[in-house]
Amino acid sequence: MHRELRRELWMALAITGGVAALAAVAGYPLAGVAAGLGLVAALSLRKLARLHRWLVRGRRAPIPELGGLWDEVIREIHRQDRDSERHKERLTGLFDRLQAAASVMPDAMVVLARHDVIEWANPPAERLLGLRIERDTGARIVHLIRDPAFGAYLAAGDYREPLILKGPVEPMAVTLQIIPFGANERLVMARDITHVKRLEDMRQHFVADVSHELRTPLTVLHGFLETFADLFEGQDGEVRSGIALMREQVERMRRLVDDLLALSRLETTPARAHDDVVDMGALLKGLADIATVLGADRGQRIEVENCGADLVGNVDELRSAFTNLVQNAVRHTPAGGSIRLVWRADASEGRFVVIDSGEGIAERHIPFLTQRFYRVDSDRSRASGGTGLGLAIVAKVLLRHDARLAVESVLGRGSTFTCVFPSSRLKFPPDPSRAPPPTV
Ligand SMILES: Nc1ncnc2c1ncn2[C@@H]1O[C@H](COP(=O)(O)OP(=O)(O)O)[C@@H](O)[C@H]1O
Ligand SMILES: [Mg+2]
Image (tube, rainbow, N blue to C red; front, side, top):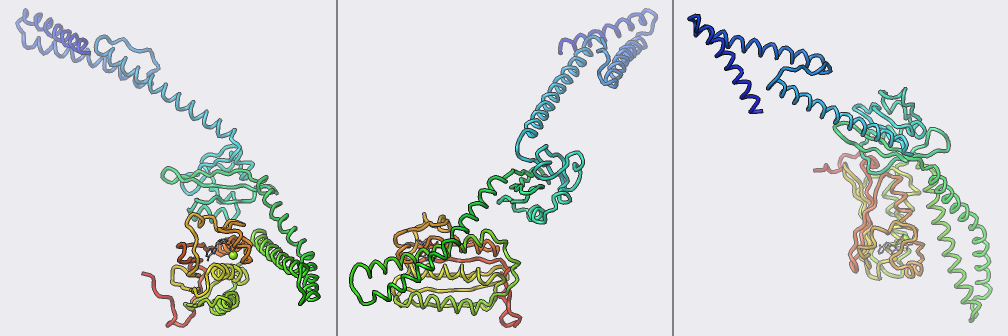
């Protein structure tokens, strides 16, 4: 480069010098220098004009031969051109391959631009989401996937849990996940779970049917065992203790069947339009009575605290969930212990809390308590009449009430089970003196 520059300079000097020398002979040396410089400038301008023309023609015309430094400049432009062309080709190739990979994927993918407009979709989006790629690109997705649950999910912006939707044709079911990216874009992914859903439905119906079928034989057995117990009343011996044991086990089976049926009802029936206003005063009183009766032989202290607000929901479901928590507290609290039932609400949320001073639960068990049949100590749970389904029922009921369960416990000190309800589920009495305290 330096060499070329030097040559260019020498050339300019030579031309100027030559013209100046000629002019000096004629007696005009200064005018000669000026004319020489002018000639150099004119030659350079001509080359510049040719270079400009070549650039303007999109560089497809044959590369002009300008010589010296100019050729260097052109070669550099040409090299950069080729590099960027190759880079573009590589990117296009990569994009084509990505698009090809996305089309053979079994899952649907839809890229949403601003305002949820469909920018791109792969072919499975047609089968799983009912879109027509050609027709629907550029349209807003909420106008095409009409299920209100989808609109609400998209708008809510909380995509931690996937959404399960009916597919465009019966009995297809899809699970759908949204992943935000870029400034305002979102990726919608959908997967066919028809098969999984069918198995899950079969499982639920099987459990419900078996539980239902077991009810009648158990009632018959129960009835006869009552009669036999009366017949052998007052007699000693194996038969009587056998009958007592059978009654106990039949009773346990009845409880299991009832809990299984309650669980499958919660799983298979749609959540009701929760428009009952549950009188929490009456519900708390009923729960305190249950605690007193269940713990009658233990002399536990039962305390109730009521904030006066009411809860909007399904009274039977809520009663069943709260009763389970109260039963657990009574079962796991020794004689002389205390159980507190607290109902507090403010403008932001409502909390139903069962606090016991019982045996407590080791921390490692806490995440699993709401799983079906999970017990910390199964022998003890069975002996105390537990089925291991209580907290699973509680969790299902709370889910249907947009609520969550929080568990805190210290081994040997006691446990606190809290049901947290959102403010949308609360109803405060009109009396201003009992209005909710403002949240700060
Ligand atoms: N208040 C409590 N104190 C101590 N342990 C508890 C309490 N509540 C629940 N648990 C533990 O959680 C397990 C699961 O509870 P649950 O689902 O109601 O089943 P169970 O039928 O055994 O009561 C129980 O077996 C028990 O070990
Ligand atoms: Mg229980």
